[in-house]
Image 1 (cartoon, helix red, strand yellow):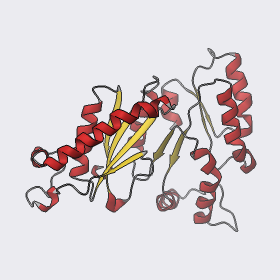
Image 2 (cartoon, helix red, strand yellow; image 1 turned 60 degrees about the vertical axis):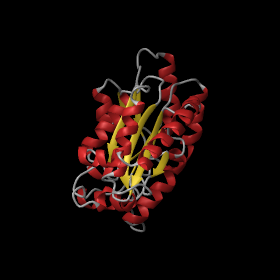
Image 3 (cartoon, rainbow, N blue to C red; image 1 turned 90 degrees about the horizontal axis):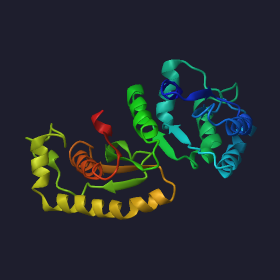
Amino acid sequence: MLHILEDRGYYCIDNLPASLLPSLADRISADPAGIPNVAVSIDARNISSDLQQVPDIIRDLQSRDLPTEIVFLDANSQVLLKRFSESRRKHPLTSETLGLKEAIDKESELLEAISVMANLSVDTSSMSLHQLRDVVKNRLINSSETTLALQFQSFGYKNGVPADADIVYDVRCLPNPYWDTALRSLTGLDREVIDYLESQDEVQQMVDDIKDYLQKWLPRFESNNRSYMTVGVGCTGGQHRSVYLAEKLGQYFASSIKNVQVRHRELG
């Protein structure tokens, strides 16, 4: 992620000791024009006692009126185990008495207090490097304005609810194109499936109800200093109904919100 930000003109520091964050903030405050955009990564390689201080340090930085955003990148334990095994990289917390699974659990525990303070949480479990790059570019770099960045993400419940979803809508109660053999291999992006779903009154009622809720409450979230919002829309397989609704909602809100993205998790 730092490479992406560095390419966009950010001054990037990889794994700065957390205890040095206040000193960095002092330097920025003294000459804000000299270092306009700074990105710092912090992970489990940091000193444990320093990591425990991070929430207090962040609150101190925010009290100085320094614009501060926390982006938390996460993945489920099984994916992390697979990534470390494939890369043959040593986890920074492993030792003679702590195996890889235990080290990952310990890392999650150490970073939990930071994760709950995040402005933007991204579940990278099902993302490629290219998809992560696009998320960072679209949701962080392109949303430097004060307006809300809104993402609609379709998914299949059979693969679990996205960990980074702020609001989740379950649309499994709607008529399912899967049971029409002519539509089974298609997706919610295909005209035949779109026509089928648009002919169902329940589907349009669901779209309208979700629109009404979001129109009413998104301004409240934004006024509460929320810069990012991920709306998950889930059906059984994440192929037909959820894809269609995510597209419809994305198209609708793109007319009033500058930064709207649509992502279909199960379509790759």
